Length: 249
View 1 (cartoon, rainbow, N blue to C red):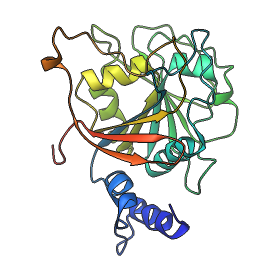
View 2: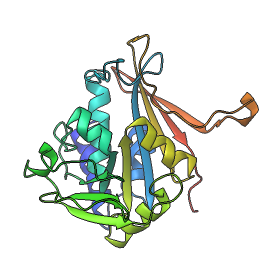
View 3: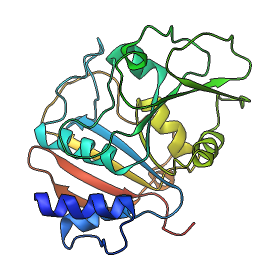
View 4: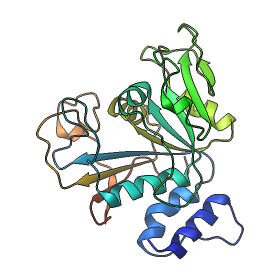
């Protein structure tokens, strides 16, 4: 990724009239995100060779290599909003900002269905990009400083991905990155709400711990998802770019 290619992609993201996706691998991988018209939802997983995203104790740092992290930050810079679950905020204390590449920070969105966050988490006090929190309309009300709280009617399995995406689209946040954790990503995939899935595999073997994607079981492999995928070498990591939903819904 050269500086010139990245400038072209940022221009495409901003809707500059004469901006076009760069040619080659960079255009194939990042062009659909930067140039998406209307709602576009990307999910990103960084995992080990054996499909783990953390140790059993919850240590998730340094799974992705340097190039895998740069890829994640490029994805953040090309979307309007990034979504994580409240457990990711509680355990990992993420900033969800763009630090490794040039570009704008996305709006940070947290799914906190049962209003478990206390408001003391650094996300609410770091002076970074806007924070939006989705809560159930049935949850207790709690004060979350420097955040916009959107309360939605719960479904049988928490808050519906479609309803949350519709609320974000109503705010002009159409390009969305679902970043974690595994249960959050699985719920969006299971709801058919993901356009593309990026799985970055790093050459590390953890042996045990939570998996990157945890979907409902299938009885036979014929019932498993087999998306069309392109494979890219990021340098330190290998990326699978999986098409879960054809363009032009």
